[in-house]
Amino acid sequence: MIKTLNNHIIFFILALITFPSFAQEKATPIFKDGEAQIVEAFNDPDKWIRHDLFVETTFDSDGDGKLDHMHVAVTRPYQTETEGLKLPVIYESSPYYAGVAPDVDGVFWNVNHELGEMAEERVHPKVARLGVRPIISNSQIKTWVPRGYIVVHSSSPGTGLSQGAPTVGGDNESLAPKAVIDWLNGRAKGYTEPYGNDEVKAYWTTGKVGMTGTSYNGTIPLAAATTGVEDLEVIIPVAPNTSYYHYYRSNGLVRSPGGYLGEDIDVLYDYIHSGDESKRASNNAKVRDSELKNGMDRITGDYNEFWAGRDYLNDMAPMKAALLMSHGFNDWNVMPEHSYRIYKKAKDMGLETAIYYHQFGHGGPPPVSMMNKWFTHYLFGVDNGIENESNKAWIVREDDKMEEPTPYKDYPNPEAKNVSLYLTSGAPKTGGLTTNKSTNQGQETLVDNYSFDGEALAKAEITNHRLLYLTPKLTKDIHISGVPKITIKVASNKPAANLSVWLVSLPWNEGRRSKITDNIITRGWADPQNYKSLTESEPLKPGKFYEITFDLQPDDQVIKAGQQIGLMIFSSDKEYTLHPKPGTELTIDLDGTSLTLPVVGGVLKF
Image (cartoon, rainbow, N blue to C red; front, side, top):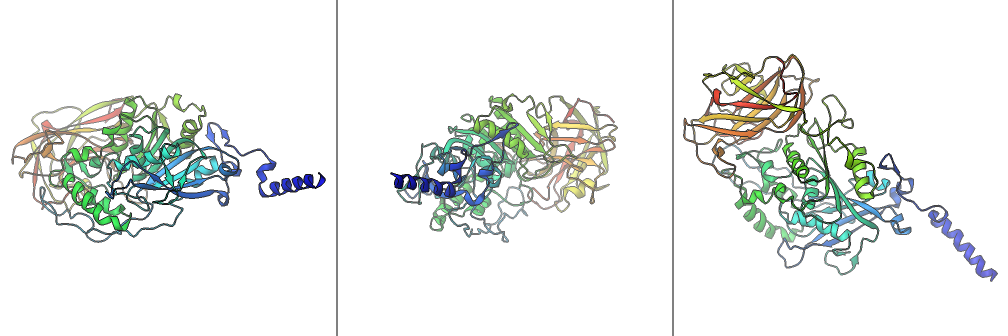
């Protein structure tokens, strides 16, 4: 008896040494001010459990006769193993984790050709796959695991060790993260190996899932949410591409994303195709050289069934996840319309929504505190008032830090009212932009020449390569909030022409002290051939005037007193559009052209 008791004492002492948690209360998440706090017991990376697996999906996108399996990696506190602790999941998925194609000459489409013509075939680079199991990515982990979350990563179809084919917006890119969420909740199977039979179960999670990520990684949370998958409670997309048409086209015009002149959807396909080398040739033939090639249409730029199938706005009906959207107003890569259109639709659907905008470029998540409150509420069920917040828009003002946004009731600002502005003649110098409509202003003509970029045209005192119309100097600051709209009555001397519009703040400020908000207010592009609709284009009759109306990119900006607002109309935009041979003439009917500007208070002070 004494010997047995001694054995128990020895075992207990060893247990205290080996598992200190035996001697103290079990570790649990801690909440303060509605946020999950860093818990020291979760904060030792050496004790995190990291493992990977392969989740079976419902599709066979590479056509090998087997359901595709997605490569998934898990990082969790060790207490989920030793103490039976169950925690919610923050999940990020991406096509980029295993590496991307190199930037080589000829990978982008050549843009130096006439409108309506096809460029010569481009170069197709190959991706050298990177990464060693079980780690897919380290993103999100240091922020969320110490706060009591499990972090999950997965490579999207046809990338890394995930099977299937990349489709760049196809259905499998929505169904893949759905399968992972289903697995986390016991509705799908996971295996230790790509083609193995040993199952892996997610016994360590509550099943509640939140998704986040930036750019393509921000698109995938929206893609998953449009499936209506159960237990995806909240998504926080950052600068997401929500429509591949809006990314690669603009109002019927072939238009590149900023910084990537000549990129198109097939270029992105090559860029991310890091999957199984033995499947790449067949994937290329099926997806890139058939579906993408036949659908993307670089000739007309029209919106068609192919693009409609890659526009997540069309798929939102099943969505029920809460949405905190994030974007930059000066993101000319994934432009701010991408977030606004989804935010507006989600709000109209009655979903819990909010939006965070900043004044900078691509990327930029909401402050960690804001994300924390959203994840804490929807994944832990903490009543921190998020759903009762009267302010739905959080906007970083021009001189403020990213973590110090100003709250507003909504975006656009509910106090914004449309102000109509009209043109008075002045070419080739500058004309006027006024709230008083004048008649008999006549017509003014510009000559296309892509060799002059937009900045040079805006700064030029006199040039026939653009038309520029200026307000008088502002006597008071004005606050623009919303989506400017322009109606242009235009004629071309050729059957096709680019049409570009910039809204600028002048005089142009440059040098070390200039800010990203100083000069360009917003921009827009359109194809006059699509004056009837996005789905129908027709050659222009030289000399005939056509009326076309389109939105510029959403904005929320304060223009300082002393500045002049300038409406600049030109043809080819060197950094964004195709580059036809210079010489096309666009003639603008000034009386038939106007700008609608959303101004807080509805008054411009000159």
